[in-house]
Length: 104
Image (cartoon, rainbow, N blue to C red; front, top):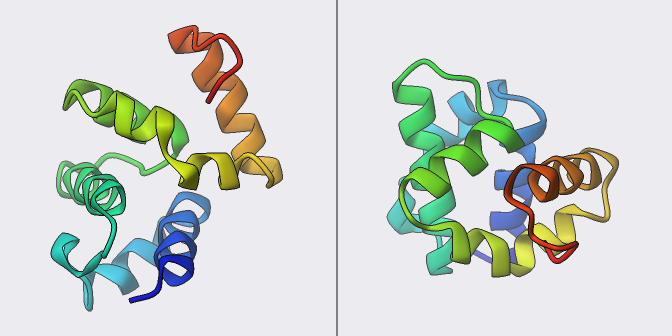
């Protein structure tokens, strides 16, 4: 799968949790080519399996809980998400919560 397609899937799930149901019918974490994308999707699976909503806040909490904050923090994927309205909002909330000094 292309990196652009992976980003689209991950971003789509964050925008609309109904997209997760469609994605989960066809995708497993191992299907993602980038390790950071595999880890992000794995956390999305964990959230869905526990009945929690998948959004930038719960995903960040789950990544942090799984000690994967650096992968999320340094991920180019998140940098790209900042270019969207919802991604920018999420970046501001993440910065406030974790004090990343403006570097998300």
